[in-house]
Length: 228
Image (cartoon, rainbow, N blue to C red; front, side):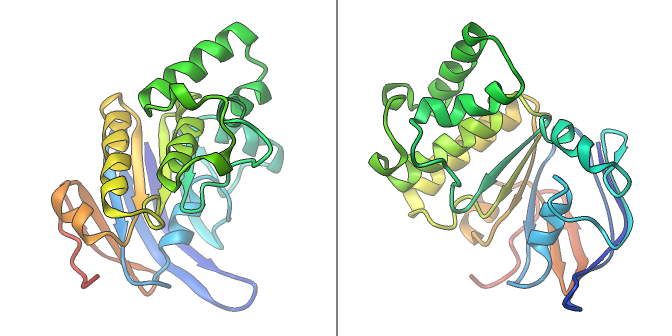
């Protein structure tokens, strides 16, 4: 499903983030991306939804080479990709329901279909009873659950999470991980950058470790491997 071939990324300021990355990820996998701060994890993650473009090499997702697609094709590509951020990125003036439904209104689903899909995903993240709340009326964990609902409402084939539990307390983090596991069990590929040693070592998945812009370890059911 995802293939990175000799991917390199150097930013305009001269910082080299990735140096010759080769990775294959199959449909339905759950992958942790780990490594020290500044190792290149976020660049690796952002390549997959074309937030950044590789300096060289190929990033192929479902047969589409992201290094070659035109700018006007990027919105269509992203319809099949859900992204969850550490800082939630919710629209403060919209309700929970509206934050989630916005992603469907962009692709012009019918109002009836939108309501059904939104309420289904709010049920999955246990927030049906807070559909009319605004983000500032929710806890951090609830806001992250809204962002997950928004990311999966289009039933994406790929879900990308960049430090999704980084701002949450341990108990809330485990609640969030249960949702990620449920999403993965439904067939969605999950790629998650994280610094959480406990999560990686407890919920055993594939681990890709990046250091100095290179993959230094790629293990099925791997450990975190760093002091946290």
